[in-house]
Image (cartoon, rainbow over all chains, first blue to last red; front, side):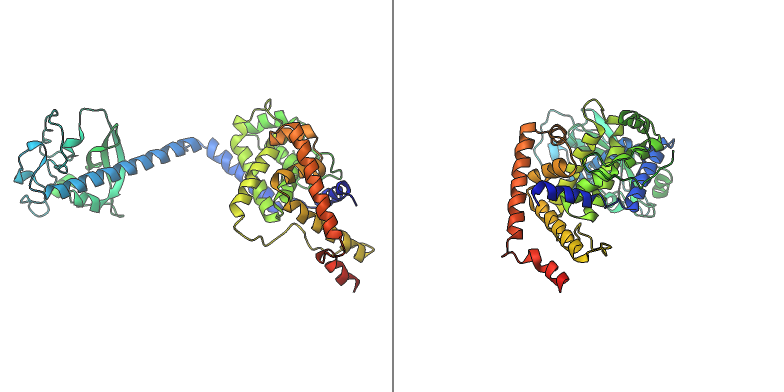
Amino acid sequence: MNVEQSLRALAADDEKAPVPARVDAAVMAAWDENSRRHHTPGRATLSTRKALGMAIAGALVASLVAVAVVVTSRAGNEAPHTLRGVAPDKSSTPGKRDVPAGAIAVPPRIELAAAPSPTRRPPVAPPPAGAAYVLVPDAGMDAPLTMMRVRMPRSAFSRLGVPIANPDGDGMVDVDVLVGEDGVARSIRRATAVGWVDANRE
Amino acid sequence: MIWNLSAGSDNHHQMPMTPPDDRSDTELVRCAAAGERDAFAAIYERYRIVVYRFARLMSGSTATAEDVTQEVFVTLIRTLPQYEPQRAGLLTYLYGVTRNVTRNRLRRDRRFVALDTTAEEKPSDADDPCAAASHSQQLSQLRRIVLALPSRYREVVILCDVHGLSYAETARVLRAPVGTVRSRLNRGRQMIAVRLRDAESPGHASATARIERCVI
């Protein structure tokens, strides 16, 4: 038997193999699922979901950067000097104020780590009393900012000196992060103020 | 439309299809892209056998062929709105997707040892069981030889000699010049011939082992 005859015999034998019914069912189920997803009003399309997923991933990265920056700044505050000649203000240093039990411990400012910084930029004014933002002054506020809402663990807020009295059941809190064009977080606050300010300020 | 999934063909040199829907591929694609389920079912019915058998011969595994078939048509579902009939026929497009998916699967799974092969052991109803066993043994051997070919030769041999595509059609599927297809086909056939001769030589033990058991 030569090669071509052999291959013809192989082809004839191959035609006896049907496609299993489970494959048929799976393919048509995929079609139905795809149709349902694309033709149901009010549901996100695949591309929308992808964009949403990417936005969430970006927000998570931004929140991690923000936490890293703030944690680093707190470590830097242990040093005897602060940035840009700003006099250490013990009343505004996180963790060193006399805060009544149960009261909010939002620091008006968080000093960044002791990296040399240019003096051209004026120091950022502390937020008015009661503002929930935790500012990161040396990161620069004169550039366009993007606000991103992310979820982060309550413990990360605690490390900022901002205890959250009423976290969600999973220990996560929604936060708004102001992110600059360079991806560095400028400011962070808790997103929903419902119930938490009063609960912490009473 | 009645969705008949038991279609088949007796002539391997034509496309193994019996289209129950006489609309053209382009029309079916257009309707399917608009969400018509029957149009997609007609496309699937028309080409599922081709895809499955090509994947089965390329991979040597029925399980892989099933997965590949499913993945190819899921890919088609996703890409229907972007498919441009003027660039490639639907069959060419499906062959190309099948080839890519199969190669990716084989690359991904090469660290695993296959537990199944396409050679299915079925009871023979032939008048001469010994001859049938011999024939089955030869086919199994041929499958192993084809499977052992480098993929660039294997795909050309399968497309041209098993599925009956012309050189030009094969070249479109592989996106290669026709001359390349010819040379690869020639080289693939030569390799198969050499390996068949080696297998049939008296010193080759595995070629006769199963048949001897049948004679006894």
